[in-house]
Image (cartoon, each protein chain N blue to C red):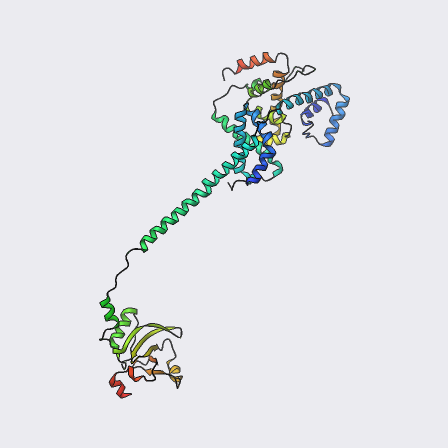
Length: 181
Length: 239
């Protein structure tokens, strides 16, 4: 590992990307305190690895990747959390109501956190609408096909939980299914 | 384009990150224009994405976050330098100081004393002779030489090796009546003795004296105009 990035370069990274990085961290962790800690950790880590940033145009993708790795390290140190079994994540067969019901931000966050980490990260990156499938696949070190199939299942889960009338019933079913995890 | 292919491409046709090639995107748009079912499904998909995307991105940024982040990374940078650069440098500096102190202690040990009686006998002894000078050169420098026997060794005030025309040769210095004579003992292995003898200048207080040893000559440079004062009486009488 070389010398840390210069103060000027690192501060520029912070200025340009701290908001999107914090939002990503918040969606991953679900709390403001954890999101801020994780964002700090990501920038500190990026500062030490600054010489690895070959293309400044890809700084955002690079930072997201660093943040996700930091998040994964935390997850490994925590006890298993109750998440939806991937078996329950299936493509949605029912049509969505028209017009679509409004999305409650708190319920969205809860629903995201029911997902296993790989699905959760994928869906967050996808909805930030700033990353292509290729970017996401690169960041998560997954084939593009895997990214697409997992995204389809994660989206179906969000739709069924947040947009179908029996979403609450589905939520109960999920809770029962994950009680033993 | 059929409905199945079109629906597969829906997720690649997001407004902010369209990943379809131009021709593919145009064929999808043509299909959507012709197929009301796919068109409706596409609109719903985009609407869902918009709903979830907006909600997902709506996260309030805490007040002062940017400054806290900058403060934290700057602290971390200073900590890094302290641990990786300054502390090791300080350790090296301390090691250098300790080595210096250790060496200083070694070199500041008491210096040896001087045996003045020995110094007197070595330098001023009245018992000096050509023979004792020869022995002194051999004992001191392992140099075999033959000091000129005709000189008065009561007048000898110094003997040592000295530089003479780029070579190190034995030197004897005699002092008498406030005058000095310097005697260089030159060897045939270092100099062309015949050439030196023939090149002896006239009108200068320089003498080239022969030795009993054919491989040696004595070059004498003296002051006072007379070499006799440095020689023994018997030698004096013979010259």
